[in-house]
Image (tube, rainbow, N blue to C red; front, side):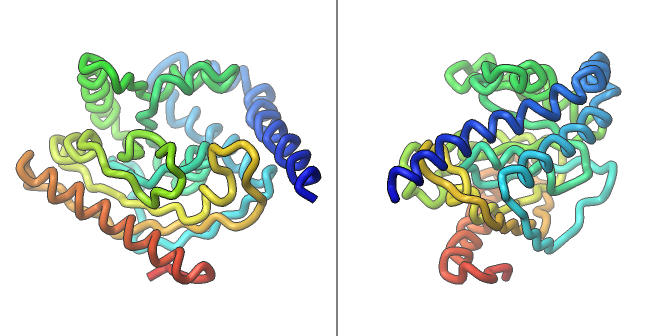
Length: 253
């Protein structure tokens, strides 16, 4: 039985990368055209959402979203969520029509085909370089001024220890949100680690529950409020994860 599971996991992981490639190849000319200018990004974002949903449904994932508050169209937000899976990227794209830009680690740009567009549309950060972190702020500011939202996974990566429910949060997302006075949108992903973790021999098709929490206002806040807002957002996401774990069927309080 264990042998059959291993075969399934290997084929399923390979299938994931095939699913990643198919829409990119089909839409390739249009994707390239959309990234030639910054004004074309909203069109790229629409195609990215098609790509994301194609992968999610192709992998047998179906998502259920509970929203406390809607995001207003053509308004900039700072979107933050817990990070446990590569599928977080696809699920985040599927959640909202508001065009946003990911801030992500530069290592993902090495993935064939996917990386070509990733490094041209996302804000890449080298966390070992202070210069890179400063460039992130400058590029994010430019995107916000263009009316786009920013998405950051504030844990700064996926914890190596999968028993960690929620890692500590870095300051970057909260500093940006305060400086630009844009609302924060906390989001909790309940099942992504169970469905498709970074552990190769693991995962299964099934539901991905999402909680989009009430927005956190940053208007009038300053740098001295950063820690308070950071811990408030982390507590919201952490408490929701605990609720999801204690009541795996509902947990949308």
